[in-house]
Length: 82
Image 1 (tube, rainbow, N blue to C red):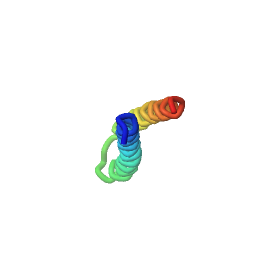
Image 2 (tube, rainbow, N blue to C red):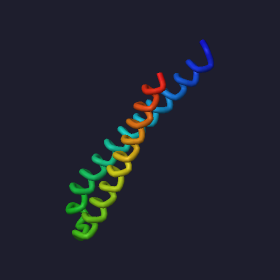
Image 3 (spheres, rainbow, N blue to C red):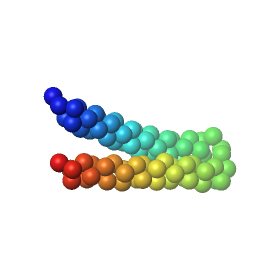
Image 4 (cartoon, helix red, strand yellow):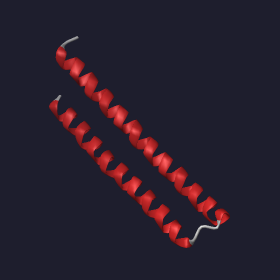
């Protein structure tokens, strides 16, 4: 293998790893958000905590969107170089 092929493979592995991390953040965010909606009333938490959980979920999903767009751009640039 040439050095260029190795760097391409390393780049693809890094992008795949980042993609897996994004998917885990999305799934984890949604699971925690749903649990908070279910557990909040059971524990007698005030409604303002629901907003806190909602905003935390939104922050996680916005982060995932930004990183996903970065991944898309990186893959598009990598294909253009080939």
